[in-house]
Picture 1 (cartoon, rainbow, N blue to C red):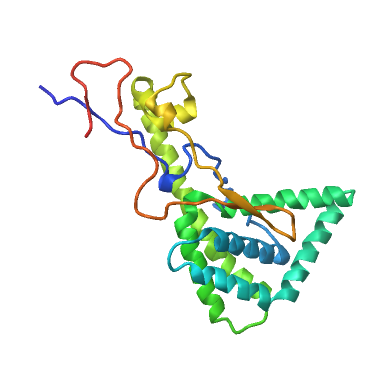
Picture 2: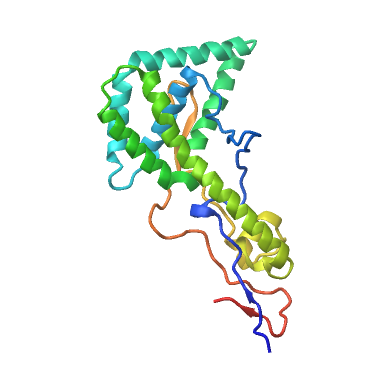
Length: 258
């Protein structure tokens, strides 16, 4: 007699990420279209500055102190270059909108999108590691061109998110396969399935399907945007709950994987 089919757990998102989220698409040339795609020199400077700012506020593990101290030195070292980039972006928004208020609100909205991007919890470990590298690069930088430094180092921060997006898309593929094969019978016991499809019932799955919220924010004095502060457990534990698959209608002879 053949052994009963073991039922695997539903795949969980990488690094404690949300069960469902929008991942930036990839274009026909294989390039991921993120907030850092196709930006000019001034935007590169400001996005880099924004990313480092997020890291200084959110990377708080032992060894991350260099991120905050180097960021302060970066701000003090390039006041004119940063001011020039900020003014250039302001001019661009004023040219694109009919009133100063519309331009101000549009820039604040854009800045918020950039900050939220860099504060994404799922990429935090790699992002903080990249920020430590950036801080070390700055300590050894002997140039005086903020555009040059930003252009060379923004990709280091960006790569942390590109890797996370690839991992998340793999989770989406695997979870879609699980849903197709096991969802109807076992989905109600799995938090990820409930988070995506719902069920209207209070079950183990629905109870554990909540996601992390920002603990606070710091206002950027230059743009008025809120910089999210989102604590993330950077240890080796996985905070996403793993729940044993339970059948809605138990079938005799079917076992659950241990």
